[in-house]
Length: 243
Image (tube, rainbow, N blue to C red; front, top):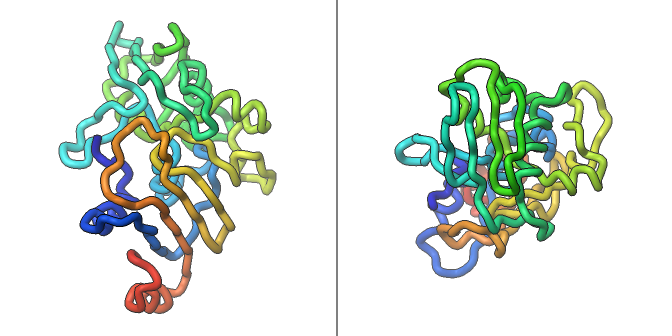
C-alpha cells in the first residue's frame, strides 16, 4: 500500500535509500492548531493528522483515484445509500479494535456544530451501523462525489472520545480545550509521542499498523520556525532534513 499523506511523503522518499532506522526532522513557519481531527480544517494539520488518523478511503498518490484505507469495499445500494465494508483487524493505538461504531461516531462527529469539517460531510443525511464491519451512509440527494468527501473525514475511537470527554469537536471559537486537542489515538502508521505547541511535535512509528510501511523512518520531529532565514540555516547545517 502506498504512503498516502503528502506532507510526510518526503520523509519516506529522503530516507528510503538508507538501511538504518532514521529520525526525520523538518520545519515550517507555523504549528498545527490542534490534534482534534474534526475541529479546524487546516492544511498543515490535515497532512500531519493523516499520519496518525486514517480515513475510510484516500487518493492513490499516482493515479489520484480513490482507494481503500479503513474501508475495503463500497457499493451504491440506491442512489442515496452507500454501503461501506470496513477493514477487519485494525487496532487503534491504545489497542482497541476499529469497528462500525467508531465509523458511525466519527462521521457524526464531523457533522457536529463545533466541527469545521461540515463541508466534507455536506449532503450526508445519516450514518447507520449494519453490523460490526459494515456501515450505510445515506445522503439527502444522489451524491457522485461522496467518496471524495470521505477522504478528509478521519476515524476516531468512540470509546476513547467518550472516556476522555471529547465527544464533541473542540470549538475553535473558544479557548476551551478537550482531551483530543492535545492527545491522539488513531489507527495510522505513526503515533503521537509529544506535542509542545509552537515548540516541537514528535511522532513515532506504529509497530502494530495494519498496513505495510515503506522506507525506514521510525520517528518524525517537526519544529515550527517562523523566520525563513533561520529555517534555511537549519537546513544548510543539517539540523533539519526538510523545509
